[in-house]
Length: 265
Image 1 (cartoon, rainbow, N blue to C red):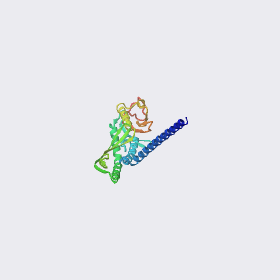
Image 2: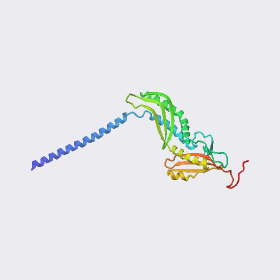
Image 3: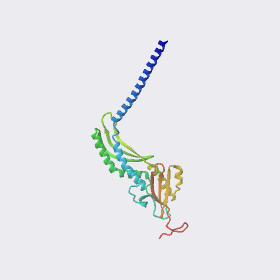
Image 4: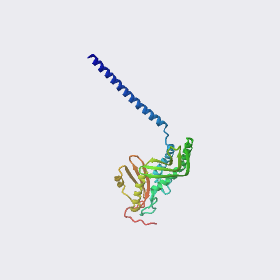
């Protein structure tokens, strides 16, 4: 009996030893995998355009803020002063009782051009610096005709830089075009503003609550000025982005009541 018990105890001890070895081995494997992952992460080269993207996006943010405050233009030519900003008239007439004429019928494309012109000088500097840094790290950079384009898309502003080809060796990824995205509601704002402008040009006014029923995250505010101009501000209540622009359509002379006849001098 004692022999049997002793044999059982030995078997149990052996089993425990095996389990302990398995557990320790598993821990070592996991730790080793983590170490390898960490080391691999250290030595995997980062995207060579990361600093360039950060550099370009910094200037792009400035441009987006400006066009959003000023009605889609960096430097409005025909605008109205409102709360310290000159805001572009996107639909305008200087006559009374007349509906306005669209000033920027292709608003989205106009904003894209304005942003390209604004960021291009700084973006060129960013690209030149990036090329020098890449070459110092062993990359081969071939530059053709450099081109910078901007596209407004839902939820983002995309900057496309083409004309550069970057390689390091035969196994490296080849970069022939850089696309950097900046999160923004500018596309949605441009589409909503265009719809409002179409109503202003055709009917002289618009019911802003309609847009808020279709877009639950959007608030549209309309402030009528003494000369008949209107300041529209479209806001995203989640991201707190906004876009302002001005119109003047079906304006009434100051002090003239409804039903009174206005005779031009």
